[in-house]
Image (cartoon, one colour):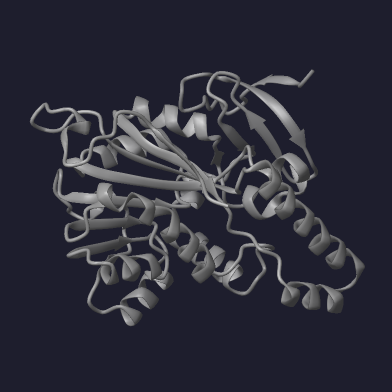
Length: 318
């Protein structure tokens, strides 16, 4: 039986439950799980100030870029696989409209959106160094290095809002998604991706799945059902959901491991086995959800747009 505890800070789950189950504890952190909604939480979690700080995430991005966040993968690979998944719902996304990328990093996905026909693209990230790089690379796109609430964006101005691997960093994910709800037009779309806590990798590796657990940066981690529930509480209707794979250990990774010693070789072999297990079980290490406001500003249902979506679309990309 898993250990039970009451949060010491006290910090309840976004769903209101203040009792957590302990999945495991190691020397530097523990992983807790909410028995009500299934959300996971890193314990101790990063302080609110750290989780939103420009300096913190500038350093985090630099580590990932130089391979110090083990298994993080390249931005290009992650973006291409994310985009391949999102393109399945092209009728829902309606290019030619306005798009907002929350947590845009160096602007790669913003540029993809622009190239695929989105009229006006905005990127937001709290890392000043990443935004400086984005502005240099893509001068035709508008970027902000401030929190969403400080950008001056008006209500219901966006046809598409993307949060690609952002929600796991948020101290208050429900409040944040509720705030985004006011920015989405009545028939607009919200797309969220985040690490999958039911992935083959996590089921096989558990506490060793450090690339996605990232205890120094992540706060909340989700299952597909838990994330869907959060969106529904925030007044969104889920129209598509699924998982996809992003981590592909390569021969180059093996070569680098050989130069670092037997522990790194063992890690590479473990990641290979985990990636194979994930594909065999059909559970990628990233989940995605496509959602629309439950009711538009004019009171019309979210499904009353040009695309009929009577139920959730379940998609598994292999």
